[in-house]
Image (cartoon, rainbow, N blue to C red; front, side, top):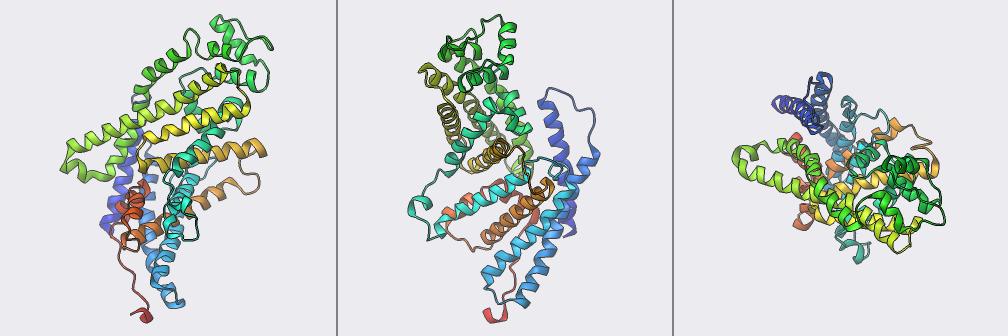
Length: 419
């Protein structure tokens, strides 16, 4: 046990250092220093989560065995859930995940856990067959979420989280002033000062209400190019940049499979490159398709708030089909988190108006980790034997991290009545 804890502490520190270096290099900068405090916090989080989970699993297992008459399988799930729930409190050590503000990480963990429960839909006999056998929930969720978050990015940018809005501005490839100005011209029938400044800077004649057609707005979004040239020019320029966004993440994630590097480094490098290229294509399509779809809608003079929202959301969400199946769920949950954040801000004016943000973040992370730990236990102990159900659970990133951090699962002792 001590060896596992020391390994987790060292791995957490190394992971944080490498992630910091790769993140800095991705910005075309040379790292000048290492955040020692953050490195130690990450190592402490990795270690404390494993220690608390192992301890709680033993304590809760004995308590439930002595105080209840639950079935062995039910007690196994409840023990794992309560242990993961308690161990989730150790997230307070980790600065980047700690609930200090509007951090979407805890909500991603919770929604990802809920999605994993949806994977077990064939177990729920009370659900209709159309629900249990539909295999593209992730793409459908992404399309719906993208309708909200991409529309908000153009017309209600203040409701989008600063993290997601910053990523879209940095990776979107187009001037946000022109995109926002064109959106407000169509939806609000208003010429924004930002659009006038953009036109003055580029030497373009500004649009006129009641005179300028919707299709003519394309010359502000991509001046000097028609819609087809703009799309392929965007894809050619941005594809390499998008690959560099994913490469550090895949390299850092491969550290959890160190044996693969030692046994077959060529296959590991090949797999990382394939995943990077695939994700680069996905991000290129997700950022490029919505703007192309908006050009098509404007071409037919059919741009309204509803048509633009549906066009950019569906065209962007369908690009998720390019990604691997096991990655789609995590991406869908990420987009859904930001969409809920934007929707809540749009209609209520604040992120969480009743419950303090810190409490919600901590509760979301703890409940999410409890569900993930319960799924981990029942899968590793063979409670779920259908390969079709095991595969999507085992191929999740959280499952791989838990298997590495917690090690082999020891079977809990059954009650004397069950012997």
